[in-house]
Structures are given as C-alpha cells and as structure tokens.
Length: 258
Image 1: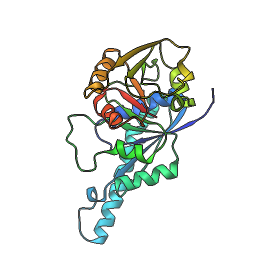
Image 2: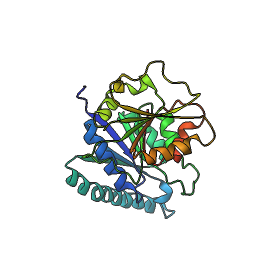
Image 3: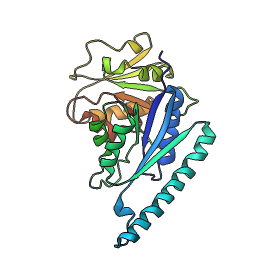
Image 4: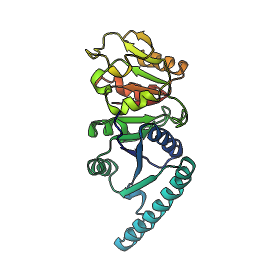
C-alpha cells in the first residue's frame, strides 16, 4: 500500500453544519493519511454595505479580519480535540470563480462538501456539487450531516454497481482497509458494469442487492442503505442520466463520488 499523504480540501459556507462537515473530514483524513485545508468564499455583496470606495475598502478589511477570527475559532478546538493540523484559506469574490481558481492552484487529491438538506429551498446557483464534479476530476466526498465518519470506528461501506478501474486507487484501498465486512453492493439491472470487477474487494465478503432500473430505484436503494447501517456509499460520476444527482439528493449517508 502506498504511503501517500493526501491533500484534502473542504469547501464550506460556514453555516451551522460546518462542524459536522469538518469532523467527517477529520475521520477521513485519519483513515487515509491526509492533510486538511478549509476554503471559504465571501460574496462582495455580503460585505460591502456602503457606496463610497473608501468605505467599501474598510468593509472588506473589517470582514477579512472577522472571517480570519471565525475560521481560527472554529478550527482550533477541533484540531486540539482530534490532534490534527487544520489549515484554512478564504477569498472575497464570485463563489464559483474563486473555487475554480483555488482548485487549479491547490491541486487537491480529494474535495469534501456538505450535503444540502433535501428540504432546503434551492436558491439561484445552489448547485455546488454539480459544479465541483464538472471542474474537478478527482474523488469528491459529499458528507452527511447526521452520520459521522468517526476516526475510531470501522466504516460500513456500500458500492453502487461495480465500476472496476475507477475504484482501483490507493484512496479506496485505504478506505476498504478501514471497512468492516461484509461490503454491501447495490446493483441496478440494465446499467453497464465494469468488465473487470475491482481487485480491491474480490477476497472480501460481499452482500449483493439487485434492483430493477426504474423511476424510484434510488429511493429504494436509499432505504436499503439506511437499513444496512451504511455510512459511506461509493459511486461513479459517469453513470447514465441523472443517477449521480439523484443519489446525491436522495441517499442520506456520506457519498464518495469517483
């Protein structure tokens, strides 16, 4: 097994679920040997309240200091409790533009996002997961707000169909080594699988569930995932149609999108 140090980037809006998002990421980092950096973007319209240029500069400087203190106060207790280094960066500008530039500059190995609550009202541009999956080719972890990936617990992992080559990475090798048996495999009939099953779990115990491909397949799989006490479901972003988007919206556990 490679002894690689992974660079993990957390994209956060600093809302109420940020603590659970960071703790999930800490659990991941402990399992795969990773460094964590949080990145946050402020929109100029959230900062500049006055019209004059001098006042606007003062607003930006004041908000920069406030954001720095907010991030420091947020991360320091978690870093101390879990004995892990947590760094952060922030920017002021267009959210998607700043995130795209940051991804190019930082070259992360994995990006972590929080799962949007299904009941939340969708605002214009509230599709960060879609945007990141288009701009970043590496694995994206979308974490549940409820079930923490605790660093001192074995994972209960599920795999949606077999996607062979894309699963054969040192990242998933590390994750599977922290997974209790049996692995759960959810197969949708009619969807093409990899010609060669992943070598990573061929010698492990597997429980397989097979589902018909229909309009409510993901909802049914979500129910089985919940009943199976799974806390991480792996899936391929290249599935047909809107399957990945449906899984992100409907499956209420952490998702690793390869």
